[in-house]
Amino acid sequence: MDIDNVIPPEQAAHTFRLAEESAPECIEFLRDLVTLPSPSRGERLVCERVMREMEKLGYRDVHLDEMGNVLGRFGSGPRVLAFDAHVDTVGISNPTDWKYDPFRGVVSGGILFGRGASDQKGGVASVIHGVALAARIGLPDDFSIWVTATVNGEDCVSLAWQYLVNETDLRPEAVVVTMPSHLGVCYGQRGRMEIEVVTRGVSTHGSQPDRGTNAIYLMNPIVESLAELHGKLSTDHPNLGRGSIAVTEFRSQSPSLTAIPDECRVHIDRRLTIGETPEGAIAEINDLAAVKACGAEVRLLDYNKPSWRGFAYPTDKVFPAWETPVDSAAVKAAVSTARRVLGREPRMHRSKFSSSGCATAGLFGIPTIGFGPADEIHSHTVNDQIALAQLQPAMAFYAMFTEIYQAAAPGATEE
Ligand SMILES: [Zn+2]
Image 1 (cartoon, helix red, strand yellow):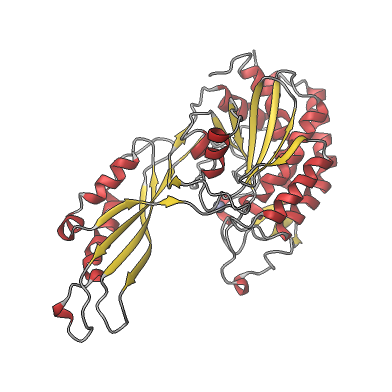
Image 2: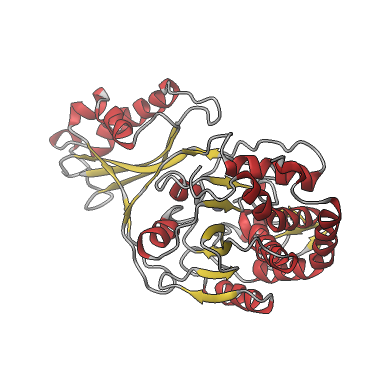
């Protein structure tokens, strides 16, 4: 079956027309989302707003789960697809650094500015409207489509989907992540893990440093070795590139500022490429001469913070790299859908980030693709923004994907 021609031209034109008609409502919804601050673990207001929009658009089974994710569904067939968008954002740091108020949803020159505009409230708004359009046009009978508006995504990128797959009945055969891909198709991302190195010294009076062992001095050569190790990481992957190591925090502890510190900790943001393992990444650090010399402790960190609903779901901070094969039904369908929507060959998006794909594909092996409006270069910056013209093609993509996916994976629940 030629999946590029599954949707007849009249139906495609109808979909584009519906997306165009829905755009003003989608933009209003997006502005509301941006005006409601939703830091990780503080997403209540935005979740309530998402529920209202889903209910208005006719979603079935709209509900909050115990973690605080919002889910809504169209269709009731046995084959399940999920479209995911995380609703939380990072903070804003210094508000005076922002040209526009991060929570006012200012629109200027067709660009909407504000925290979360790119990462990824544009994805939230366009997928909720886009999947509703798919239902209006008519979903294939075999399918149930869940839209998951997930929480804690910035704090712990895979948490919501670990919970959804391990603790609920949701088992999609493929997942679309609505990441800011600038309307490119993403089929893999590096993974991530968080590691801490701890050195322990002996405290003494600051006036007599020679009598103690300064934990900061023990840490210094370790930090230098970590910077060198970053440059030596040799595992390379044709799509995802190399992994990386960055020291992102340096803390010490001493009984007083007039005493020698007896403990020092560094926090490491380790990005993993395919071919690297979490165990290997820990071992590389344990093998550093500077670590061995002082017997520093190297440990994987875990995440145990309660969600906005007070639900904690402890997990190791390991989020594996993932790649969905280019000849899989999910990637073929994504490329074909993007081609149809954009009227040109889509760009293959090389994301620098992590996403729910680290759980859906990285942990559970569910074929996953990423596609969404906005450009990740604006994410987490004081210029957070989205070009509103990208909402319409994103909606059309989410509206058409299921039918094209069905043609790419007819009747099969595996690829
Ligand atoms: Zn982010």
